[in-house]
Image (cartoon, rainbow, N blue to C red; front, side, top):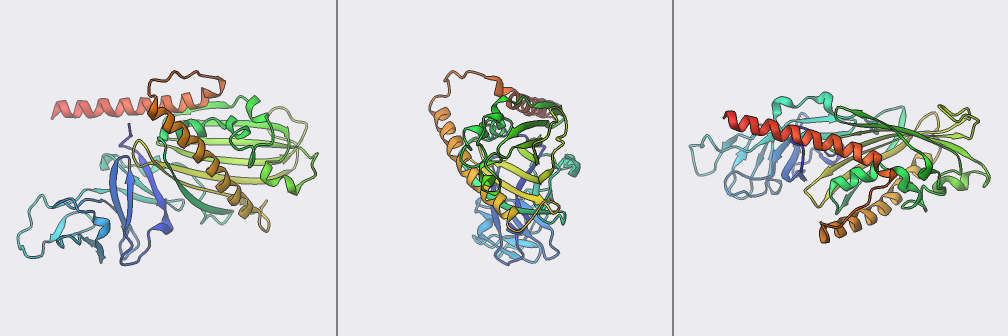
Length: 352
């Protein structure tokens, strides 16, 4: 169900502080993790399970670079090796806890869940983080009671903006008429499309005359396991029908979204939105932040409803429509990587 050899977002960098009791509990792809910062600032990701009686380590405490289990006091270094057992001098060789490669990039914390030898930081997706001085980015997060494959389908099919987000983004059926260009990449799909001569998104319509029209440009980079990076631009409507608009650029923005499956039923969603400083103004990125938060409440309700129905009727017949092209391509990429990883794992097992 989950790729192991992949980087998963464990949250925003500010969620892991230097506090003595700052132990962050996460569940990623079915694995319980605990994250903490060493005194030098580096983040440690460790299985959230003491090797003694499986007590949760996030209920422990930090001691320098190490973490101590507060059930029987066993102490583990940042490499997961036990260095102290109170009341016992000899430390068994097997007294250790699994650790995971960690990289901080674009203000996200990324954890590699598979073979550490394959943990290539170059596989981390491109994003624009709040620390980038050219962008005024606001961040947030939400948890959704749905399978991450539903999130993939939702993000790869933006025609739903017309309906699900009719009160926040919609305002036009133009989204249902476009046919995005999809290009498959080794670990995802790049998509792009224009929505021409439409009203401003609902959340911004109060800023413009009611008859004013715009050209909206969407450029998406989607990568496994479920990372969605959208470069979104708004132009005043121009005469161009193909390629760039010949209008004036009103908004140049990025929304960066990393969706991390906890298990088959839940995801943690870390997202942001903000304007380039060239099109930003007082309150602009705050308005975008408010809009995306409202929209994600709409998505959450729809996705959780889908998930419940699919759990109730796993054999229910589904009919494909034209808007399934993008989701189909992205899920094809994911499934191919899952099959490849399973085959490699089987080969390794047989050789052993």
